[in-house]
Length: 238
Image (tube, rainbow, N blue to C red; front, side, top):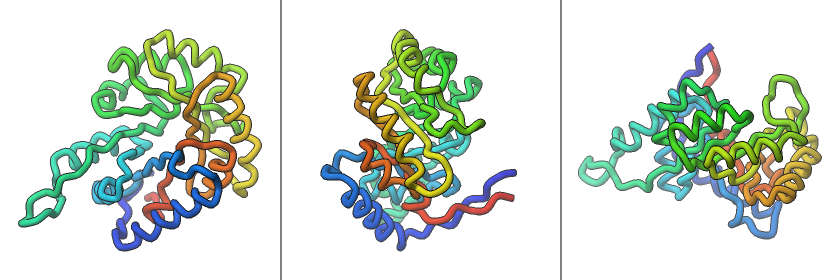
């Protein structure tokens, strides 16, 4: 199945962003310390531009083709309406790749991606380091214990962090996807990730999405990955 491009509602974006900031502020004492990654999966380049104009320079994509295409459109100014029809200046996006790292696609992504979230195996780190030494990576931890969700088992994380550092990569922190179901069900896993990050002296904890961001932030998240909460419902698959 392929995913159609959802219609982006620019008028509703400001209200949704305000709501997100309030949700973060109600869940921790230092809301400015929580970095928002605007996940534009399923939306066009106009959603990326809206995020950039609002000051959300961290932009996440799950699929290599979408990231490469949108990066090109935003960099070229295609479709941006500025004064006199000229493109308006935009801050440069900081691209986060959120999907599984497929080694055959790293070459296309490496010139664009700043943050590689979701590194699960040493071989993925080797592929990244070969194309872009010194890249910033997050190790994805399996906090749900659900088959097929991916991630490194928590007890294997110290070994994987060490091996990635041996590849001359900047291992900045850990990342996790909460289990499906009620948000409160993610609390134990998020707490475990924060504790693990503390034990490894890793400052970044990327956890929390549109439904469970309050739980994640209250358990120490420093980075939330938000799509629907910012941009609305994505297009249906076909």
